[in-house]
Image (cartoon, one colour):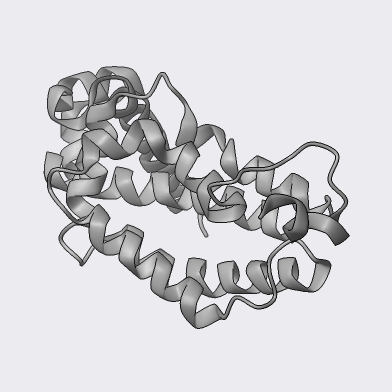
Length: 206
């Protein structure tokens, strides 16, 4: 990569970071190209040269945001920390559960997801789902996930949740409950009890 291309890439990233910060604070529809340009310290012409339109900015910001979350998830999945700690960190991922983020931003992401052709679904199906299944299998091997549960049942459960998320009326209700849904997936309705040995994991929770 030559110097020109490197600078171009850095400037594009700066625009995406500035736009993401504004979108997460106010929602994409309430932020103008002029405000993005000011935050990124570039001209509006530069933004249009890189992205052509505000709609393309929004699309690229969503991809940029999803990639950030996915990179964080991959680091977590591949880390050497104990399995239960991985679950706890998944539940409390800052990018997902940050209460200061505008609900409008997540509503816009869910609206994009509802199209069935979103980048979120592309990443989930091609990369996220296979890694999640590996993670579930690891949990079964270590005694943290019930080995009697078939992966087919788990996939069907996830598919039902996906279909529900595509409903237009679900965004506002889903956002405040995202952490709860992650807990339900791993711990069930009974919840986690303190100081439970993994050998007694299911006997104590059921």
